[in-house]
Image 1 (spheres, helix red, strand yellow):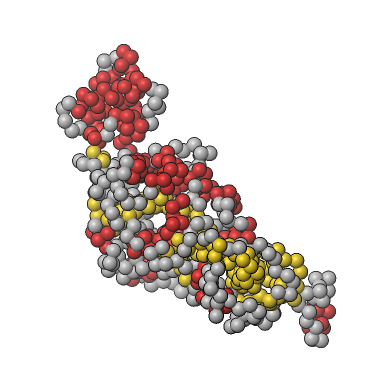
Image 2 (cartoon, rainbow, N blue to C red; image 1 turned 45 degrees about the horizontal axis):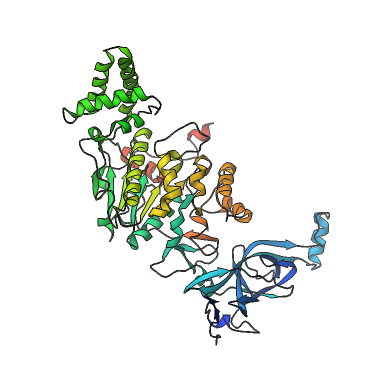
Length: 556
């Protein structure tokens, strides 16, 4: 039976089950090796059986005596196998195959199986919550190494239901679920992967969990990846359907027809409600061009006296002012030429969609479906909505925390090295640096971390990283993450679709997971090209040519 937890101050040993109390043995634990050669508190090597050794990513434990709460306590330190090496002095590369075959027939086998293990820590309790402490002592050579019990591993990666988001299972153990800490989202999260690795699918899982916890979220969705969050995998309305609202501009060609979606609302801006300084900003008129901006302000003031107006009316008024000549006429003409580019913005309508009590409502997930809009229109919408979301939280007009998901974030907050400038980049940088103080939390999603603003990426203290093979993107991720070690970086190219490395405040220790199956329908899934071609052949009554006599290939 375990000793009663001791405490000095607020720190005490976490009350692990029977295995945490045994002083001399390890009942029920399976020994898989012994520590050999040089060992450090954070890294060691152990010899294992060639027939039954723990594979890479598997979890093992080593007993150690550590100071906890002012007392020496025996603990089980969780470790992860980071590499497996087989070594032989007899089977040398200097020998030819014939010699090696004779050695094998003679039964010579001196192969040694070695595993490299990285220490993850042991659990202790501090102020009523479990924390991970790193051992201060090393493991002497000869120390036995055991396979970690499922229950102990679960403790490392679990949280109470109202504090944890179920993201998936351990890659090495499908029986062990992994949860993300809700509090880990307070310092922003980046979800990073190359195209097709499963990043949007993973974000869908996170949104499902946030909906379960009653969160308020705004999703910037350039490709309609999240418009079916209100449907289950069989396209039936799910229990959260009434809390998912899709906002869409009427001018958008869109990826899906509005009739296919639930709870669709218009996403528009009334042009006559824009202040003249905003019009000048959208038209990219520099602040130092005081006279040109003044011409815009004067034209807007005159039009407002007449009532509602649109872009065409403002352009016509500036044209009339330019015909007067003189300095004022020149300024009006320059303003006219700049405002012509606003015709690219297909977002203006008869009314402005309210952010407060519209896009931003308690417990609502608002998906801004930007598919079918050009880049300029998407950029303006993101800038407008996020500025208003931040203002409402800053002023205390919206009382609940807000999660902001930005898909394709590199398009809206590009790297400073790129010449491209966006309207939305400043507010995204502001939220990244100050949002956590006011309860606005970013989930930045990108497949090109090397092209995103480094200030934004570096403010994301947690990363969920799926497969990345591009060396520039790998380097950008490494520079942004203080907790992604060289070993984990090396794992990124070898991850399968749907597998992710998670580091930062989302988890107690870095972990590699297999993302769980989504409960909601996926909007951005790849097209089943084989199936689509089969349906095309059936619709056109076409029979595919087979290889063999008479085929085109056989005639070549």
